[in-house]
Every structure is written in structure tokens, then in C-alpha cells.
Length: 430
Image (cartoon, rainbow, N blue to C red; front, top):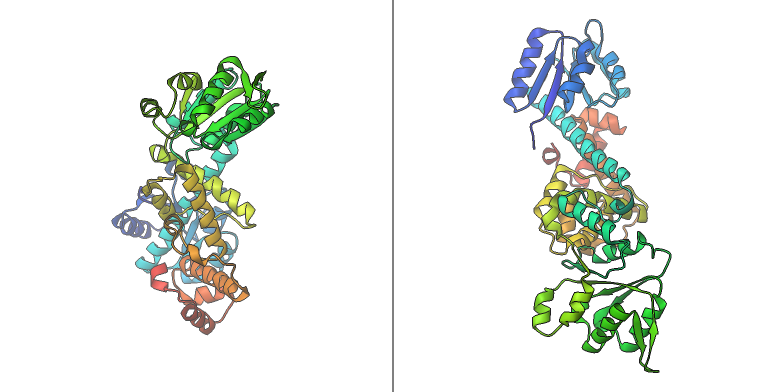
């Protein structure tokens, strides 16, 4: 992760230099200004993760600065004791937090780090959401922006309106069924039927009935390498002559049909081992489209996960969990043997964990705690909400108990009791 960037604004030169020295020693990139009137220009040029500003300054105060900035990073105010009422007013208008002069270096760094981290997380999630909003057509079905997936969409668009058969090849869970449906939906056959069939389990009678029901549309045959020999002969005739044999009558019927097939097996090996007829393979792969494994396009994982989180959050009547830096690291470190299907299952587990008030993306990937998915009672739900609110307040107010209690509108003693009862580790949160 690149170093945090802070824009420092203070008319006191010694204070500015002190803050720059502290933050650069902690690994931050800094830009210091003597007056707030220059802030807007430097926000655009420097792109800070957080702004640290004095409250009382000539020409423009910290409060006026806060009001002037739109869609800016979080603003942390640093103020002398006499300026605290102004700082509190600024916080009510959207400032992230404030620190009193003379400042505690450790507390200041904690507040700024939390503010910058939350800003980056929001920015990352916003970029993903904007990307989803821009998607249209095939982009909404075959998600991703890596070269492999862009090429797949281009190929689907290119062959969709041809009459040629298409063979989809890819590992289990890569979305061969979605690609087959997309081929149908954007073709001239889109108004006709789309019928999916497992080729490994089809009988002659079934193929006859299915082919008739799919006339004028598309027949999708999954697991084509496991198709019985008798059915392979019928398929060869169906593709070549557009005819299907009625097993009971022994007479052929003409059907206008397009065949799309799919497999996760090595087709050349299947031919050599006598599992698949070579002449049938030639007819099936008029076009061959290869679907990439998810581990080969890891850059697409965040946008896919966000899409699935939104889908399941809507299904379960909740808000989708935000993707933190730790979540993204866990997603990118996993090799996804089950591909997009596995990713979708992980998203559902993560939403269920969020509904029940526990868990992380790493837990969802590993399946940890999956046995605890029974719906909580009122007491458990209230405890989960209290735990979340108190933990967030601890981080926002850098562990200052009086500030935390005031923000939660409870007494200091009640706050201490709840922290103990809920098993919260304040030091770990900071």
C-alpha cells in the first residue's frame, strides 16, 4: 500500500514544521500550507488522504475551510483550548475529529491513520461501485476488465449472430453457462427458446423432445465429453443436417437449432481415449471460446465480489459489507479453485456473517464459523449492534473514553461495563 498523504494547514510556522517532522518520520507524504485559502488547489494537485488544519487562522478559519471543501478527504482539526467550541461546531458540520494543542503525537497519528484508512476504503469501494454502474450489455453478464475477459466478451459478441456451433471450454465454475446464455440473448435467436441439458445424463428420447422444444432457439449441452456414444451419433446428425431422429417412429424431423456445448475436460485427450467422437468435436467447435480461470484474472476479483455482495445484501434485506484493505488482501491471496462460483458462495457467506454481526472476508473464504448461521435472537442482535457501534466509536475517538461515552450518549461507567461484557479489546482496535 502506498504511504498516506496529509495536507497540513497552519499559519504558525513552527507548528507546521513540527507536524511535518512528526508525520514524515512516521512514513507519511506531507504538504504544508500557511493559509487555508490555498487548500482547494492543493487538494486537487496533492490528492491527500486526510487534511490536518488549525482552527483559527487569518483570512479563512478551519470551519470556513470545512464548508468550502466539497467531496474532500476527512478533515482533522488541531486547536488551542480556547478554540474547542469552534472545533466542536466544525465536527457537527462534518469534521472527522479534533486534537487539542499541545498535541499528543501518538494520539494524533492514530486519529490521522484511522481517518486516512477509512477515506481510502471509501474511495476504493466508490470506484468499484462506479465501475458497476458503468457496465452495460455483456459487461453486466460477463464481469471484468482484464484482457482475458475483455477478449471473451469480444468473441461472444462476434460469434453470437453466426449460425456456427460454439464449444465453451473452461474449469468448473468459470461461468460457461452464463456465456452460453449470453450467446443466445444477443443473437438473432433471442426470441426463441433457450434449453440447457446435461449431455452426460441425456437419453435418445430426451434429446428428441428437447431438440423439438428448442427449435428456433439454442440448445446448450453441458459436460459434452461425457455424452453417451448413441447420443453423439444423434448430435452429429442434428448439427450437420438439422435433423433429430424420433426413436419411437424411426423417422427424422427437421429442426432449426443452434448447438452450444461446454466442457472442463481436455477434448483432445477425450478423442484419443475414445470418449468423444473426433467428427463430432469438429462440428461442435465451429468456434471455441476459452473461459479463463479466476486465478488468471485476479484484478477482476474486487468488482466481482462487490457485485455479489450487493446481490446477496439485497436478497437478505441488509447493506453490503464494505471491502477493507484486509478483505482485499484476503481475496487476492486466495487461488480460487472453484473460480467465480466459489467467489459467489464466499460473498453469500460474508453477507450472512454481517447479518449476524461477526466474521471477516478471510472467515468467509475459509468457511470459519459457517456452522453459526442460525438466526440470532433479539439479545444476540442487540449485542452485535452494540459491539459494532462501540468499536467504531473507539476508533473514531482514538480511545478517549470521555469522548466515546459522549458520542454514544451513555455514562463512562456504563461504557466500561459494556466493553467488558462484550469482550472488546480497546488496544487491538487502536
